[in-house]
Image (cartoon, rainbow over all chains, first blue to last red; front, top):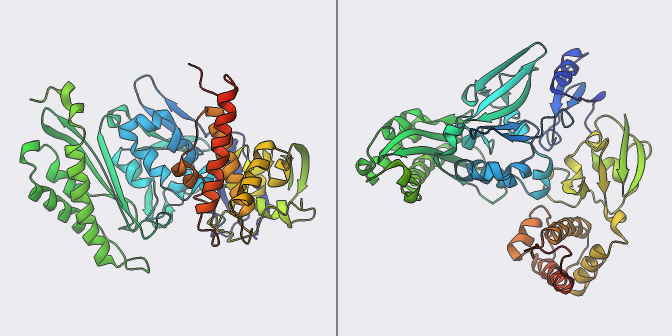
Length: 294
Length: 175
């Protein structure tokens, strides 16, 4: 059993941070708890944020989304706003996590704060330029998700609370697709690739290529992105996409473990990046009519 | 810690260690365990689903949910559904289709299937085999190979649909 002295239940984000800072000893925030109970960290108390008003998904009139940190994976998978955002990229990532009962309690905040290199939601969120909202007792901060992870199981938080994630309406229009490679459907991913890009008048605009399970932290393959961004669709031959895949493979930094070798993971980053780019570029061309493509 | 919970429709107060799981308190842990022995202790890692219960109507693995998470919430175990007509038809169907062998996974499976069929009934839809298998994705069974439990659930779903067709307006989608 988890050797805890105290279970504190916070009624708001502010109270949660105050309860965390109060001590004595070391505390950990808890939401779903599905990861924490697998490897209970040594600490004196937990602060439960399930009653802190952080479980909502709110859409703005402009199409921005704010997702509370304690939103469950089941809600992400089934919420109509998230289903429609960028082709449902985030919903699909959530629907792949664990199994049905795990998704009832596991949360987006927990998936990110646990900070595994293989965090299932991270590549999709990176590809959509997710912004983290972080609260301390007397300050607030927002920062891009790319800057949130500092190492395996490490984040910038240091006792502060991840309040939620914001997605800008700009990203909602992107063509977004992801692939993940696993040994079995419910196992941790060996390689994850998520791509989100926009096509305007036959030319590629913003491109995001995000990778998971192949570096100490979920990451973007920015050199590969630069190969695609601004290019004419007609210039993006299969060879060019394969090159982008090879560049992404050179950018990642995978490890050998019992699931797969580093060499295999790196090879698969190249293959999946090429395939997902190809699918995203060819995806649903009728979407581009409003852009006036010839 | 003191945990106020509505367990199987009854307001209950638990005294539990701060680090206890919901499974421990429901089954055999702490100073005054609830002795809900339908809730099985299996993998204790959220993989096998033998400990599945409903938390506010949603299926959860009670082995990886903190007991404190249930404070102010509603927990339903198989014991609480013993007189529920839908649960009784599921149990009968599972027996009739030989969907029970060793039986260790059965309570968890029944909770997952009950949740699915109740949601489908409310939405006025009939779950197909894919939906049934998705609902059982968190329930590990090493005896049946899933074919018979899926057939049992499909039979109950078909019967529910027939009942709904005979009583229009009750649970069907209004047109």
